[in-house]
Image 1 (tube, rainbow, N blue to C red):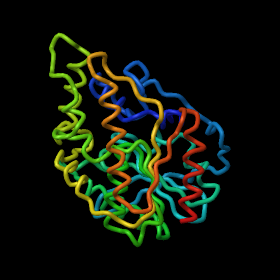
Image 2 (cartoon, rainbow, N blue to C red):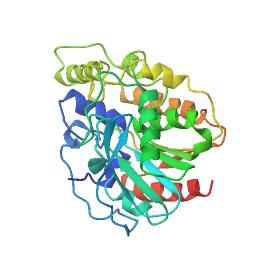
Image 3 (cartoon, rainbow, N blue to C red):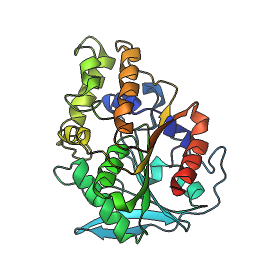
Image 4 (spheres, rainbow, N blue to C red):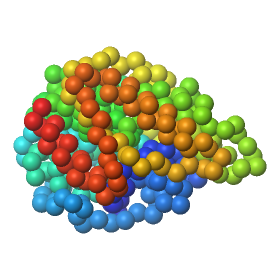
Length: 304
């Protein structure tokens, strides 16, 4: 099933709660542990925007000898969507691709180890994931320059790609991106969490999820934790950048100082904006405002 597009406004903080509680499959559409994306919703339309184009049949594309599954819709300027950690193209976007396809050629794909693409290698980095993204763009025959839109962990992948392919990037749109300095073993998130406490099951579960995420052997996409440091050192670029973020904070376990964690996440969004000189932040005021915000931002990006 597809997850409701209104879940796109949920912060990646909820992802960590879902990981901690052992939620499998789609996890980024999470607000609290009680509303994980394991409770999925099927959507036939994007609230506030009408989807007018159907997705084409699934395609199998080969990049460096590995098979990736992808789907596309529409015609016009090229757009590719990069999903959050562990999300399949079927679960990540609801009817967003069909809606955006009214004015562009939109494609979605499954990264290695996700959905029906080939198995994940033993270790991946944002650089290697960006290389895969570039290969998928070519294999799908998308005309460059391309607008790349990344949600959550898809943000670092999109930005890593754009930093190495500036002339091929029309614009980058990131939605609730993991900002530099927030995630990873040395990130602000782990420094702001209370110490591990076996007497607090919710907090212990959160730490266990973080430990699994930071270990390539247990990370679903075999992400090398050193990738977060490399991400924080990406050079500035001149590609137009739009950073869409939730106004509403997510929920955290009771032991966590949610105000400090949310404050750090928001403050570090300045580092996202610093990755490009023509950049701006777009505050999304409510969950049901996300579809319109995504569509209107893409329309602006296509005019870049």
